Image (cartoon, rainbow, N blue to C red; front, side, top):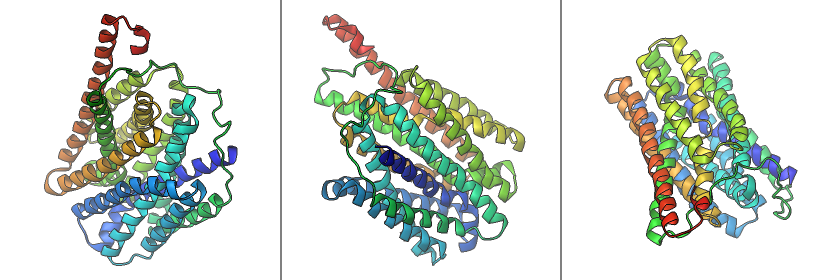
Amino acid sequence: MKPFAFASYALYFLAGLVMTTVGSVMPQLLKHYELSYTDGGQLVFLSSVGFLLGVPFSALIMSRLSVQNALALACLTVTVSQLGIAALPPFGVVLLLNFINSFGAATVEVTVAALMMEVFVGRRAVVMSYLEVSFGLGALLMPIIASILIGNGVWSYSFFITGTLALLLAVVWKKIVYSQEGADVTEAADAAEAAPPQHLSRVGKGLLLSLFLLMIFMYSGIEGSLNNFLSSIFIDYVGTAQNYAALSIGVFWAAMVLGRLATGWIIRKVNYSRFLLASMLGSLVIWTVFIVSHSAIASFLLIPALGLTLSGIYSITMVYANHTFPGKARVVTSLVTGFAGIGGAVFPALVGYTMDRAAPAAALWLVAAYIAAYLLLLSTVIMSYRKRAAVALEQGIDSKIWK
């Protein structure tokens, strides 16, 4: 299983590179085509639509092809689109290629995450934290590469790098031998978590699942907005130079990587709801301070702090949802990933529009509203669990399963 695991981590590393490439060079890309931030928001929106459509497609190809062939095909899709964008064709073609690129990236992420949820049942959060670290390393490295390339006037080479790596991984995955038997080991297990509600009606289950989907919807809007507009925010709101602004994403993702490394340890000791509540409360405080501060030094200190608090939100939200609905890993993971795609499509487009039509500060407060909305949804989930615990006590059911 080690080759399978490492090859899976490599795919998430590729996904991290791909998801931050456009954001790392967004100002240069828009300048090259003489476009506005609204156009940049549309680029991100269509990209996220491609990601969203790739989610059900991943389920289809997993049922038709082997895991190896499905992931190799997804990598080849990314290869073609990234190398095509590197050639800087007309902007309409860039829109199409970025759409196709996200389609392939969705197949990669959904396939790998669903398999991990199925195989590593007792250590989902730990394994997902490893995957997210791999993603974060990619997201960290790309802005650094982009900053160097921007300084040398060859920023479009960023797409060539990702395309080449995707081609290499397509070859690797054709040779991976994969088997689920004996893969679920007991080391580095998640912290003991209360059993999910056992007697919810179909409507109750649907409502609870909807809360999780809305949570991931909000979070992906936050992360997508930061991935694609953080460098632009540093230029227009903080007032830093372009090459330093590109590094802001790198600083953010460096903290995300460190935070995800820590998540693999913390989640062995802290349950899912407490972890998410503390993380998002911290994020809201930090982002609010960022908004009221216009100092470049303060901003570069606050952004890594924000990266630390946001680092484990996506993976633990996904794991929490899978824990709540046992035996539904492929369905829940696909839905979570799909709503992540919707959030990543809608909110960055709104942020780009707000930056063009209003002051940049308005876009920043919009992101703060996303964080507050996530907290409201999470609080509703927690209250739902507590309500079910009270009902269980009244009915004489062991209260430990409702903790």
